[in-house]
Length: 309
Image (cartoon, rainbow, N blue to C red; front, side, top):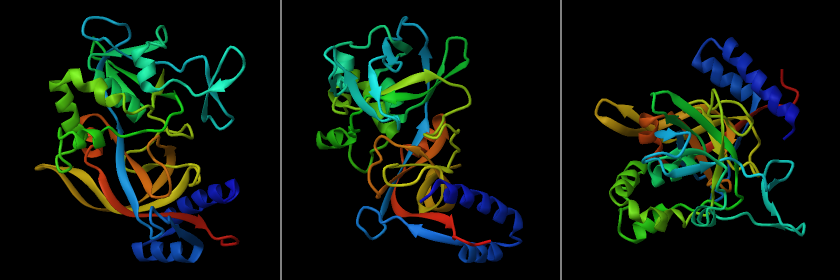
């Protein structure tokens, strides 16, 4: 897939939205002018597992004080990345490049002391921020301070939910981000036992107007996707067909969801053709939706036909 065809497809789709006079005409114009490709999924049958991510809002401080004892870190100066921005490790004094420290090594050995960017009052909230990749921290005066993704330590993401289920702390049925937040609020002494099992760590910088996707453009609630960019093209038009949660007066309900979206982000936990993350928004409602997003579905990519007018 060339950059020119991808960009041309986006422009053609915007034009189609302006020209179509009815859903039927829109559908026919898609069929006449575009090629549609389905992801092979995890089983070569098109099965894609959809999960959700969001931007949390937590209490935080710019300096360590009082209850705020759990740091987030800036991107360290010894982090080595390739031209694509992928972390390759760190350079040693003798010139070798070795893997960067794991989450446990960073936190237990305090390897990045002095590069803290923010402090949170909960170790598990700090963990959530390093998984989601962005946050808005509520400062003492009530203002929100925005932090965005600045890099990672190069380790693969490992979900801690599997270990919690295996140890009988939560069942598969009751598993959600909210349930995990409640559990660790009641059992703060167990946070590191589980979070250190995930070696991946994300670093942060101050931002405004985000969260931003991997192409440097703000993501849009329910319309931005994160996929494995070693497989799928960046910033291309997609169509998702799955079941997603939504807020209702009676609480969160899951229902069929089929919409156009833009694949403009990269997820640390999103590997292979059978995974897709949907951005759910900012704050508590988005947290409730992201924490309950777990469904199989289909994923399609749409490109203007070569030579089509």
